[in-house]
Image 1 (spheres, rainbow, N blue to C red):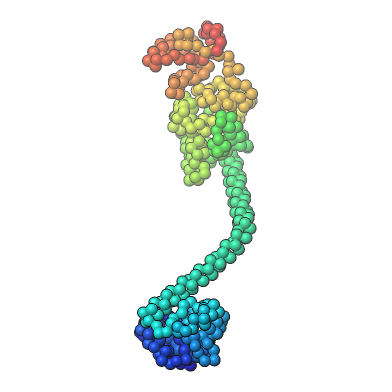
Image 2: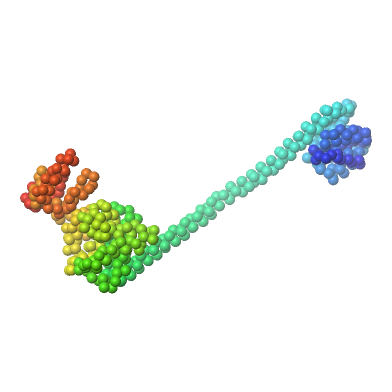
Length: 448
């Protein structure tokens, strides 16, 4: 066996094995292919060619048809069986037509080259053969890759549903755990507020449970008025902590009824809503409750404290808390020097609507306390400005078309006020409707 390799500075393009029993043929092929930077191996017989293939990776094998012992057909047939990826070419003479056809069929020969050959033609055949090899190998690589990816996809599809179920179960469990933790935090937070409310009552001298009763009533009023659950909760928390500002009072101020406070003591006392807000403002969750606490002692008519805010400038939550606070405080003798029972306190609150309290809040409170509307208890009639007489008493607040408070409920109309209402009506260009208490100062007997 004769072997040789093309030695060039560049990496060989590919490996060719030439098999022929004539040394001059092998030498010619070696010289021709080396010029093209191919690695050339040579063998003088079929056995020698098989030995080379056992040791070397060969891209193309070129075999002569007529060789002693084993001819080209038998040689290439064995190559096809044992090294199917090696491309096979046959070198044959003009007289070997039938043998060539047999070699093509049995050895699955890619091309055959006739002797004598044309160098350009044989080089073109070799280039085509290498291109075919490259395409075939790329095809095999892509098929293997596709098969691998398809196998992975089938495995993924087979397990995807189970993975989705497992992941969904994990997420559901995590969500439930988070919800449970959140609910525990909310419960613990509210419990802490209730404990703080009890401590405030102990320090401020309030009757035990005062904060809880005020908070419960305030929340019921808020819900009756259509506030959201979150808004009603803020009102409830403000009710629990509405007197927290009193915890800094000196002992000499604790327990003195509000109606008996004077001078510096009264000035200090009236700061407690503001102090309560300052204590709670650092806690983000309590900021709305703090805002309510600051304004819960304001009055609808502007005569309250600490700012003297009036009407709808007072936060709704604070207007609600004011009613609940005063209803409880009237029964404890805090706002007045005598205690009232629940019925008396209810009626006093109702009578103060439009003055101390927002009439709409009082309506909701009165409905909760008695199951009736104030209109059912206090008869009223609707009249125009032209029907008004001095001495009539308003049963409801008089509001402008924009919602501004013009006159509060229980206001006694004077001659001067009647003239002002007539002038207001003329300038507004629309008629006013007022509600007055039935039977007051010869009110007309036209029922609303």
